Length: 237
Length: 254
Image 1 (cartoon, rainbow over the protein chains, first blue to last red):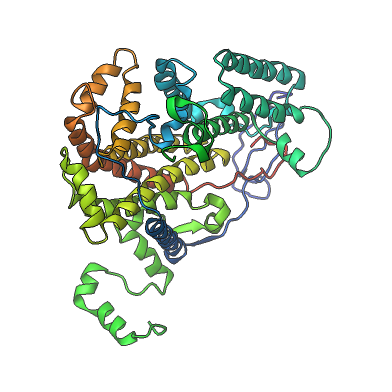
Image 2 (cartoon, rainbow over the protein chains, first blue to last red):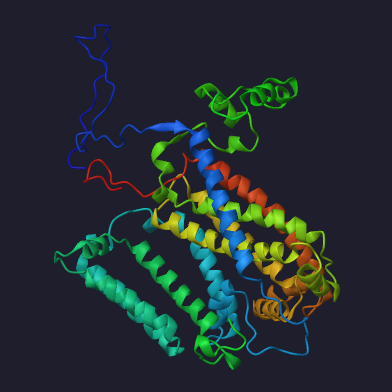
């Protein structure tokens, strides 16, 4: 705000020509802008309802085909005395089980999943997530400093635990992040990367790490949680 | 009803006293009746009567929420069928799997449907959450609906996890043993929660019964409750939000 607003005098008159009624107040420090354009609306029935029905039908057909082609796994009856090697959790927990290989159980099984849930819940309440400003739109020197230190710190921390499945994606995402820290122009992909916000970089890093850990846990871990190729896996993943 | 092959039958049904006592409005051939289709129906009235045309585009939502809910309906239908043949006891639970496979008509088909449907529901919920994040659709006024969504994701994972034990084969037993051993590590609350969940200190017959009750009663009821809130709030918060649009004025921060 540059100058304080001038005091307003309220005058009363019934003559619209001499004294027009004010319908909008434009402050001296802001420009009047139109935020929203006219939008087209359609009836929910049939436009949305029929599309929902079609999605449902596609899901039923796809699942039926899968159910006809592939059988759900069924092994021998549960036997508490005979531990299969390896024993694996369902696929969506295999990322966590992979972490168990690098970290003590309380960290892999409690601290990490707890942090993920808390981080997910607070996303809409953290101010940083509400802005669409690209990461490199502010003071670049400062951004380089703190984002660079964050990446180095995370990499060193996970490297101490020999957790390379997290270190490598961290460095990859960091490299992509810093590849657009300069001012240079470039192709569409570079322009796309330049628009990425901080929360988007963090989420992309998280998804990449979670995917890598889950894939390793599912397809590359054999007896004694040793590294094996998927085609040497027994029993099959 | 002119376009249908049986116009007279359609008309006769539609004008009968019984049909009109159930559905009070006429054919959906006027916008007034199309509105009535939505708000005279308990289930459809979670939707608004009109929606923005752009929200129907595929890239707006990729229909991921609809895919997840569709998988849920398949799971409810097949789950009820499977319950007719299932005993949550040792060793009958495992024998029932064999019954489903070799004796019950289409038993293996319904079990397969239930299994792959569960995978699809977990995957769909995860992808839906990722979509909402990159579209920044968690921003006000939708903050709380994002939180409800996180709860729904957790309930979905718990449903899938409790269902994983029910076949009582080696895969189920050791998969659940691995997971519940992790819960033991939580300080203070870990061991008592694990004891409560398993009805003992190891995965046993008690655990099977408790997982069965959680899987078939408690968690589905919780899921449907939160899901009702979730969908209702989509409407209350102004409909589904797709890709964020650039502001009309480039100087205004979006």
